[in-house]
Length: 328
Image 1: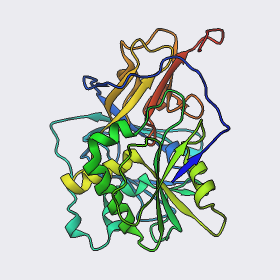
Image 2 (image 1 turned 45 degrees about the vertical axis):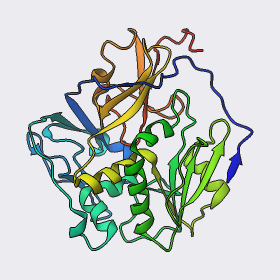
Image 3 (image 1 turned 90 degrees about the vertical axis):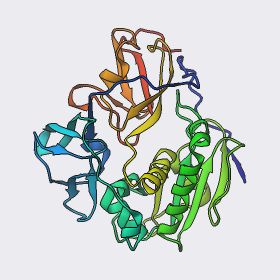
């Protein structure tokens, strides 16, 4: 079914990425950013100097025991940075590719959700309203898979999904099994998008931003209220769940877009989850540029201990840092 959005924002910013993937980017440090996990109060399970494996538990939500955030890649804890009132800002890991990963065999878990909780991939889901990681024992009225992106300088997710179709479908089927009594929606843009999973309702969204936002999909298809909570998850993390099921370990890399008027050659890049954005953009951008993890509309500026790719971000935007420079 097609839903057309007529009104919205079409920001004509320069530097749209080409549909080619750069596989040569080398990353030495990654980070988990505290502000990505709204409302989470971390109980730290590691300290600076510890060696951690991909999939190892780093911290647990003090308010919701059982919700763990795990290491996206293996390495050594370089620093744990806190702000006012000891609020967690970032946990930085220096990568070590010689280390192994923790394995997760889905056959060892009686419930689908237990695999997600143990591996840390339950944090891929967020609730609406409130945009927080769901409580482990909660049951959503619906689960929305977002395979759209209408942010400026973003790409059509289908360009990536079509090359990872097996993993995406496997992840989508698994997500549908988490709560069979809940409705399952998958919203997409490209008319070539495959609709192959039974009991998942597929909807094509067409139009300018915010047509690609989960909030827009929920508004049209299954509005939330204080008494009706739904979960959302991005296409990128659906692929990662499919990867976990197939390879029994976390997917450490993902493909994102690098674009904007300050990028020499805007394109797609394969990078680690939580990549250091100074390393990612080295030699690829103009001097005096502002690096943004995410969209120019709602991303965070990558500076200091926050100079890393956000957990839920699928793009890096780079714009001139001078207020009088022309963006368009």
